[in-house]
Structure formats: structure tokens, C-alpha cells
Amino acid sequence: MGYHLNGVRLSDLEALQARLKAALADTYDIQHELGSGGMAHVFLAHDIKHDREVAVKVFRPELASSLGGERFLREIHIAAKLSHPHILPLYDSGTTGDFLYYVMPLVEGESLGDRIEREQQLPFDDALQITGQVADALNYAHSRGLVHRDIKPDNIMLSGGHAVVMDFGIARAVSAAGGDKLTQTGMAVGTPAYMSPEQAMGEEVDGRADIYSLGCVLYEMLVGQIPFTGPTPQAVMARHSMEAVPRPQIVRDTIPDDLEDIILCALNKVPADRFRTAGEFADALKAVSAEATFVSGGSRVTRARPRVRKQRPQLLTVGLVSAGVLGVGLLAYQFGTGAGSSRSRGDAAGLDARSVAVLYFEDLSPDGSLGYVADGLTEGLIRQLRQVRELDVISRNGVAPYRHAGLEPDSIGRALGAGSVIVGSIEPAGDDLRFSVRLVDGASGVDLERATLTLPAADLLAAQGSVVQQVARILRQGIGQEVRLREQRAATNSNEAWVLVQRGEKLRKDAEERITQDDDPGAFERFDLADSVLALAESGDPRWAE
Image (cartoon, rainbow, N blue to C red):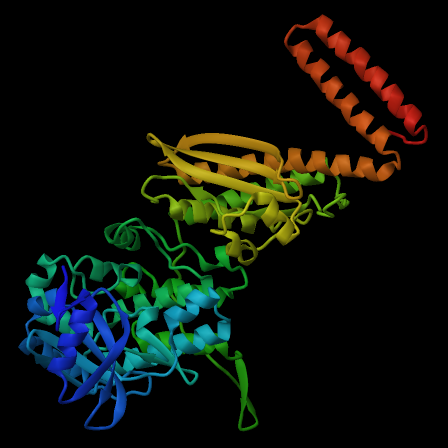
């Protein structure tokens, strides 16, 4: 639908801005849009009375009509009384025509969401500082009976080295003013990716819902991704309610045990099992970031750590841990009993076959619903393979930038210095899941080994273990063969002799295969050819022991 102003056709946004500019002309000079979300647009404006730049947030017309101004303004008036260094204050609010708006200071800086998008994973000190400051703000507001209900990175601004929480009381005001009418419009109050199970189920919430949301934010700052994803908001909320949280250390193994326990405590499904207050959450973070002991007045004092209720994940992450025990043991055995422990350098590309890059498995499901399984499988394999001393496995951070790069495996292998690249995919197959795994030579892009498994979707633990075993097998065969070939090449100066040995070996294997097929004449023919070729190889380099 289009609009016209003085004969000029305008977009919906331009029409909204023009109407808003006219409606608020006496108090605010609307300049341009700063951003937008599911519920509102934010505009840069000049506060005419106070001669300052401000941000004006205007609710979308369909939402404003559902809310009604009087109840909303009464609720937001309560939030406007908050005064805390880590809470963004509200300057003004009101209605004009069919507009419902409120006014905030203009913050110089970026949102936490922007920083996470840019850096993926934040340093520990920064993540702890930001979370602690937000927890202090929440503790202050909770003590005054206000629950935020929409804590997420985009509602946390970073300015001057400090975190500032935005939109405090807005979700409460929207929920209180909208009621059943809001539900009928299909608009949810809160963000599914960070929403506590009780809030997702529409239950009455208290400050512990904000603690859960802040736990999700801390998880994302450290891990680089949210705890749960899904094809729809309903699917995400269901996973928050039903599935155990994947352990942060699976992705980032440098996260201290105490910090992981704090995150999992904040993310307990049952509110009673989380921190009782945001202040307790903040205290636990301070204890992790500070030394266990400190000197005060010349005396050595031991700081007591807050009691943390541990939540250990089950379901898929149990599969990762259990299969990890199996996989590491299997890999360690296989690499210790065949290929040898010496490292061999490649020829033209100079890539080591034992330097391994596990690329993120591709989710081939039509609706993208298997993404979390693919990610968990990939990161679990990386973690497990890194425990095998004979391998040099590229970290999750190393392969993450190539996740959606659209590059061929050998291009990624050369960029990462990996002689062996694991490529995989997962897709539904009726009631089962089909896993495909390839071992690709990082220098040439040639497939060294491949395997396909069809496994019951209902048992992710068994599926994980089976995939680990297949990866162990193809690594053993592929890398073992590659290492043997490269050691052979290094043992002779005659390229002709080396090539003839490879041809002789191929003829010998072909002969053995024909024996299994009861083709004895064909097998003897291949054996004779192999003898002749190997005799030529010997004449090419008589001193080569091979």
C-alpha cells in the first residue's frame, strides 16, 4: 500500500515518519530512523524544549491500536521512576493521534547484539563485567517490583565502557495494556531465543525469568551462539522448556568449570533451582572474576563462593559426552596402532595429513529443523578429536568463519593448513536420520574416504556414537594411507620408482579383490602384472627398501 504527500508517493516508513513529524512538531523534531524491531520504530529527534538529541520509539500502528494509550502510559509511568546507572531512563511518553510513543536519551555506542555479531565470542572479563552490571540493574528493579521481561543483547547498550539496559518496563506495560487483544494479534511479549520456560508458557513471572534471560545472554557472549535455535518461535520456546542446555564447554573448552556452573544454574528450567535474586547472580560472577583470596588491611581473607546449583545437561549433550568417551578411546587406539606417531609433510602443498579440520555439518532438512543436531555433532567431534594427541585439530573458532563461505573443502584446507578435511551432512529419512561423512584431501580436494549412515532419529545418543565411529574409521584409513604414501615418497629420490610402486600396489589389491569374486584367472593375471611393475620399480631405485 502506498501513500501520497503533496503528490509524491511515499513508502509505509516514509509516511509514518512524515505523520509523526507533523504530530510532534511542537516538541520533537523527527529527523531519521535509527532502527526498528517487531514492535516499534526508533527515530532520532531533537528535543526542542531542552535542546538535546533524543531517541523516540514509536509503536507500530497495529500494536498501538491493540494496546490503548491510557493503561500503557500508567504502566510506563512506574518504570519511569527507576534511577540506576545501568538503566536507561525514560524522558517522556505520550499519545498523539494514533501514535503511542516514549522518549529516551540518545546513547553513544553500540548494542551488545552488534558487538556479539562482530566478535562472535567475547573475552571472559568483558562478558563477566557486562553481565554483572546488567544483574545489578535487574536486582535494583526487581526490589521495586519491576520485571523487565525482554532481556536480550539488543536491549543492552554499551557506552563508555558500561552496560545500560533499555526498554525497562516496556514489556510489562505492553503486556498489561494489551492483555488478550495483544495475544489475538499474534504478537508475543518477549523474545523466544531468550525467554524463560515459564514466560513461554504464559505463566506469571518474577525476577527469576530475567535471570534466565540474562543467563542466555551470558551464554551467547561466551559461546558465540544462543542456547537453542529452531525453525519457528514455538519450536525455540519448546526447546527452552524441554531440552537440557548444551554445555558451554563443548564449544569453548577454556570456560572455567565455576563459570559454566553459574551459567547452567541461571538456565535451570525450574525457577526455584536458579539463583534466588539477580544480586546473588552478580555475586557469583564477582567470585569467579576475582581471586579466591585477597589482602585486606594486611590480613589474608578467604572469599566464600556463593552456592551454585548445578544443572548437568542430558539428551543430545549427554550423547556428545558419552560418545566422546567412546570416540576418543577408539581414535586413540586406532591412531596408536597403525599409522605410527611420526608426522609426515605433504609434497606440493606442504600440508600435514594429521592436521584435521572438521567443517560444520550441513543441515539438509527442508525446514532447517536439524541445525542444532548438526551443530552439536560438529562441535562434539571437534572437541573429541582434539583430545587425540596424534592429531592437530583446528578449533571451532578456526572453522567457524568458513561456515557459510561457499568455498570448496580444499580451499578451506589450504587456508587453515589442514591436510585432512571432514565434510558432513544430516537429513531426514522417514523416521530416521541420514548422516553422510567425507574425508577430503586438504591439498587436492580429492575424496579419500566416505561413509553414509541411516540411524533412528529417536536415539540421538546412539546416532552420535555411530558417527564418531565412522569418522574414526575413515580418519584411520584415509590418514593412514596418506601418511604411508608420503613416507614412501620421502624415502626415495626416484619419482618413477614411487609411481611404479603405487601402480603395483593397486594391481595387488585388484588381484585380491578378484579372488574374493572367485575370478582366479583374473587374479593370477593381476599378480603377474604387479610383480613385473614392482620389478621395474626396483630397477629404478635398487636401494629403496620398499
